[in-house]
Each structure stands twice: as structure tokens, then as C-alpha cells.
Length: 74
Image 1 (spheres, rainbow, N blue to C red):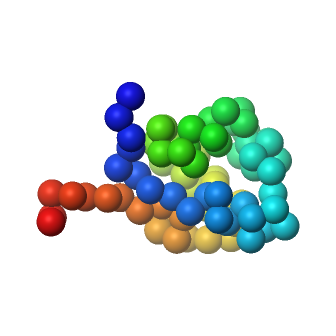
Image 2 (image 1 turned 90 degrees about the horizontal axis):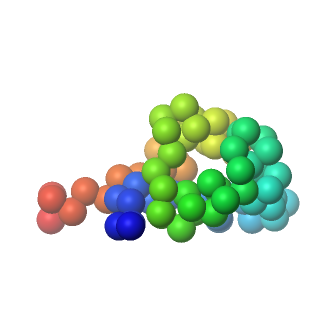
């Protein structure tokens, strides 16, 4: 499976948030811990709804959590 072009800051944000566990984050947004692992590793791009939920948990705007690596502009 190819890596996603959607990049994220979830791991950093978890640690800045009292070292929140992947399990705690998963429970907060209603997904499995494995889904959080896959998103953090860039193996899975979350739905728009899940992306907003993740950003909201950290009190951030969507573009502060996720970015799109568009290499066609290089």
C-alpha cells in the first residue's frame, strides 16, 4: 500500500496534550486504536468528518493538523 500524501501532526499533538495515548484519542473520536496508528504512519487518510473530529480534540484548525503533500507543484 502506498503512503498517503496527506501528512499529519497527530503524534506531536498527542504528546503535547499530556502524552495522550493512541487509545484515548481513538475513544475520543470513535475509531479503533489501529485506525489512529494507520493515520499517524500515513498509511490511511481519514474521512473529512474524522479529520475534523481529530482537529477538534486538539482545539486546532484542520490545516494545523493535516496537510497535503502535492508534489506536482515542484
